Length: 112
Length: 111
Image (cartoon, rainbow over all chains, first blue to last red; front, top):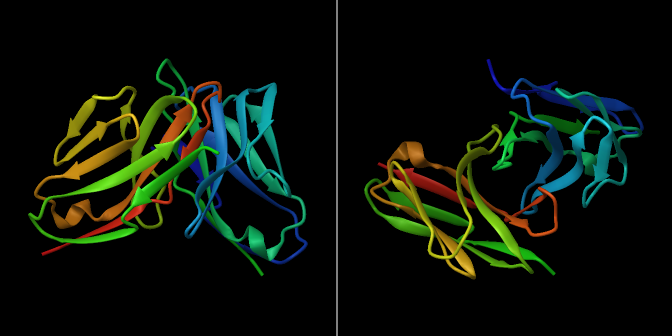
C-alpha cells in the first residue's frame, strides 16, 4: 500500500462550490504539506503543518484552508472554488532527522 | 529574492547519449538541495539530497553534484525508462522545512 494517499484522484467542480481534498499517511511523520503544481510555475506551497496543533500559511494560501484532523490526516479545502484554482494538488510528508519530503500521487482538480 | 532556475526546460536524448541537467540557485542560505523525478500524472519521487559544495551522490545511471551556485544531475547512458521531469528544490536556513522548487527539466530518451 502507498505511504501517502490522496482522495479524490480527480475532481471536476463548478465555480463557487466548496470542495475538500484529503491526504492520509502511514509513514508516521509529524510534518505534512499541501502544494499546487501549474505548468511553467512549478510546485508552490499552500499550507504546512508541523504537528496537529501547528498550521502555517505557505506562499499561496489565499482562497484555501486546511485542517489537521490527526497526525496522519491533513485536508485542504477550497471554500468557494474559482477557475484559476484548476491545478494538480499534492500532499507531502516529512519526518526524522533528514526531513526529506515524500509526495502523494496527486489530485487533478478542474474548476469550471 | 531566493530563486531556483532549471535548464534546459526540455531535453531529448538518444538511448546511451549521456548529458547533464542544471539547477542554479541564488539563495541566502542553503540547508539542502533536493532532486526529484516526476512521471506524468504522478507525484514527485525523491532521488537525492546534497548538503554541501563538493558533495556527490549516485543512483544507477544518475549522479548529482553540488557547487556553491548550482547542482548538476548527470545521466550516463540513459534508457527510455529514464524519461521523466526532473525537479530541483532548495531548503533554506531559517525556513523550517519549506522547499522552493524549480520548474523542472522534461527529459525524453528515445530508442
